[in-house]
Image (tube, rainbow, N blue to C red; front, side):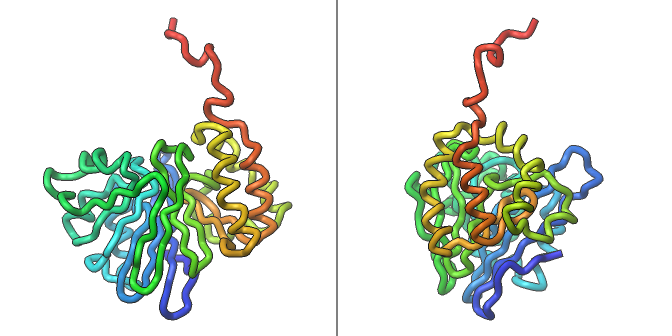
Length: 264
């Protein structure tokens, strides 16, 4: 099922949340996103082979998959872009990904399929033209990948935040955004463990928050939409999330010598 995040008749953003079977104990729920403007489409973090067929079918009523212009990959994990080879074969789209991963993602593909079709994003980020709109690749390095980008849609006022803000929930829970401080505090139990392990360290969290907070306070970002779990919506919710994330001890902040020991 597609969830409409924004649609003004010219520009549309859709979320697909239920293409991973909850009965598969080894598969984490994942969201995929489609942005359409001016007859052009961009797919954000399309995931792996287990979602490909269902995603193509789900997209068809909104945008012809074969006419896709871009795949936007926040980083190169399998749950982000392992289906790349199929998209390279069935469409003429280009992959937008960090320059750090641009020489690694071809390993997902048959030799030659990505030739001339990878747009390498510099560490500083870039603007991506889609129809009459601009999508911004926003730096999010080490959250959690070395080369990592989020995708900001200024027209829809949405930040597609990859693993930042992710929660471990079943797909049925994704349909309702987290709204309000009290609901966010209750929601934290589904987020904390993931963020403490998958984010590299607090410095990266703080730098990212300092970049994003002005956009939240000026209401240029009204919703943060992660690749896993529920959206975070409304200024109070986003401020509460940023306050928490800014102070989060995670990754290397917790590690010490005992974590680097030869097994007995």
